[in-house]
Length: 108
Image 1 (cartoon, rainbow, N blue to C red):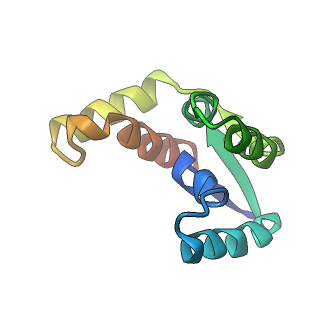
Image 2: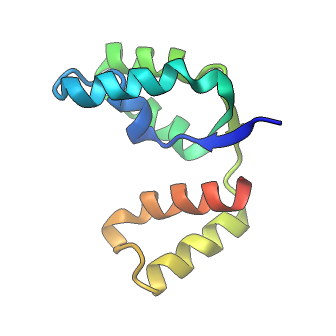
Image 3: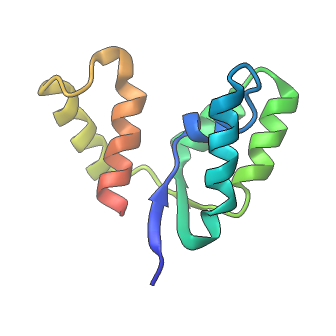
């Protein structure tokens, strides 16, 4: 049985962001090992990638995520996100990050 891995948009975008070559290299090294994992992303990741203004980067990220399982955002995930915000684990400015973490916790 493979370990599961949830990738949020920042991991995907790091692979196409050439402004930080070291981070890009480390992300590419991770991607070479992804066959060791059952990889999933969420609907939020899809939306964030679709909202990427740079068409070339958006297309690159879309190709990267194409084989990954996409998790539906559930009410349970939203409730956990609200707990994170209420307990100040995340600030309101990081509401999407809270949802990514909630999705990873609940689904994996």
